[in-house]
Length: 453
Image 1 (cartoon, rainbow, N blue to C red):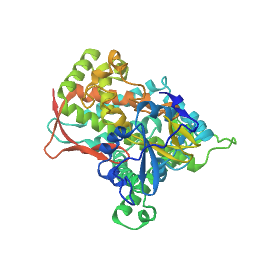
Image 2 (image 1 turned 90 degrees about the horizontal axis):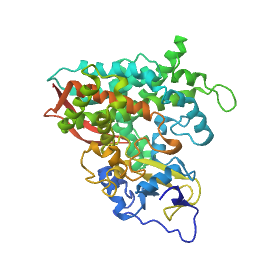
Image 3 (image 1 turned 180 degrees about the horizontal axis):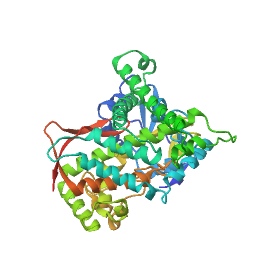
Image 4 (image 1 turned 45 degrees about the vertical axis):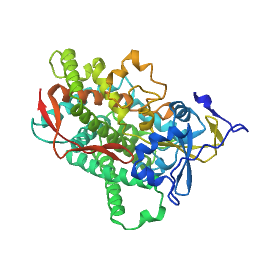
């Protein structure tokens, strides 16, 4: 099936089946809170499209790779729904992540030059410097706090490359703590929409509001510092400060704020979460850590790995891709139908919310042999062609594809190569690498001990 799977409603379209296990009043929200990953992974057993109840609301879940691709590519669906509504407090309504239509196209044109493939090498020296600084900060035998370290390198690379910010580690730590609180609270608000109860002064609500306010304060500090400096380096923040709206006037302060939020916070969260999972993978699969180290030595001749080596680090890149397949940072996405339509032969009414899970899609036994095995070689060309289309889309697809895909892959591959060239890893006794589920996925509290080769 392709985008042709999206068609107007006819007499032949039918109502999708209702998933089992709904609880009166809460619907399926309780299952999505208790064990969301298992719940989403089982939905395909009930149909290609199924109905869910989140409180009083009906939501449609899409479960196949082909239909998620059709959903992403069809103009009958837009960015909206429970996920984006829950994220509005963070991302605002005027940033590229949440905008639709002409505004989205204009904003995309503003930021796209910073992420063009031919622009990425300009960031290479910064990526190299930060990747090697990470390994030099660690000491053999000492415990590495993977959450703070992953955020530190992700935030510093984003700030130094895209915002030309001299980012202090204290800010990276603030961002890490704030995002963990905010994304956890937003997930609760998405799956259990209790409305006014989230405005009551309960401890969890106060903690959420404090973290959200600090995130916005952090962004205000970045923009204010640039304005005060009077400098206009050739970077993404300058592009935003000089951007024009549809009427030819400079874009408003709120749009600048929301765009910086969209650049710094979700990007740092997803990249940092992926780095955490890569560290966990290297500890759990020492055979692949050894294979990465050997590849790096072969490619570099024993010299420090650099940006110029990234394209030739085939196995290292495949390790990154396989880690993202099994542990995608973004595990749930939503869309909203803009018209009465059908998807895969099922009726979707105008205004309906649609949800799908890259986590479930990318772990489906119908798409992958030995689907739960960590197997980077499945991304070798001769095997990758066996993977169904849209069964692996870590950066989404269509006009909502993440503009920073090449930027992110370059830094993830380089960081993986740099740390694997120097260390292998062991988990310490109090480490907890089980999955913490919020809007994104990350280990609860991954603690590793680096050991020199």
